[in-house]
Image (cartoon, rainbow, N blue to C red; front, side, top):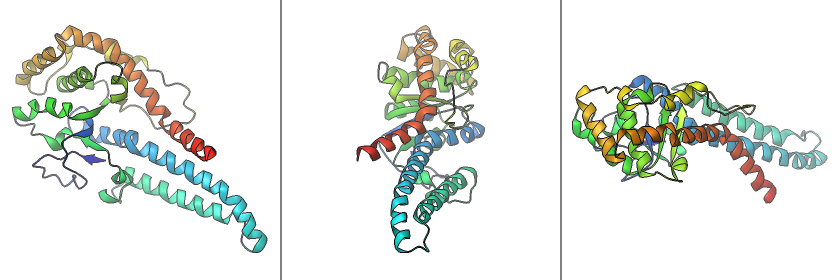
Length: 283
């Protein structure tokens, strides 16, 4: 993934940054280093790692199976070569790919430019690298950045819906894309969701996840800088007409978006493998 770089960006973490007039995803999460370190692995997994590993695994397994008859033909000519040797080579390659992915995710041994997600062309807007939070103009520019983002990915938890700046980002994007396309463009994932499991029996929202939205009230949301509260509240009212309108949207439609997003999150790898199998047998 590439962070969407601003004009001045001294951070050494932006080795993969690229300048662009619009981005694929606006990333919304609870501000702070802890929030960032929780959010980025989830976003990397959802936007790239899950699909990449599912594609590679399914393709390697299929190639390995097709190598069995070829290996048998070679064995008939050269008995000293086992029929499974070609399939084993494909298996070794798959193991190396998984080691590469796991080392990239859980250690700093793999350089930024050599990690799997460096292959992705997806652009991601991350506020901590793109705006000056010490200036009011930086905060006010968020709305323009959201308008230039094709999609939004929200890393939510119980704290997210009590943060007024996060709520503002969600309010602006939701209003811009309100309608049938919202479920496609807005993705809500939880930092509390575990890894993908093929034996996941239920992807229904938990009681706690539902309460994030059903108990949401703008007046309960706090603001890091108290002086900005009135500015953000006024901006939400300008976009939605009133706080009541936005709260009603959160209690109803956004609940459906969260439920759909959870299904997408846990179904993602299965869909990729199914697609790969359909292409193979169609060919």
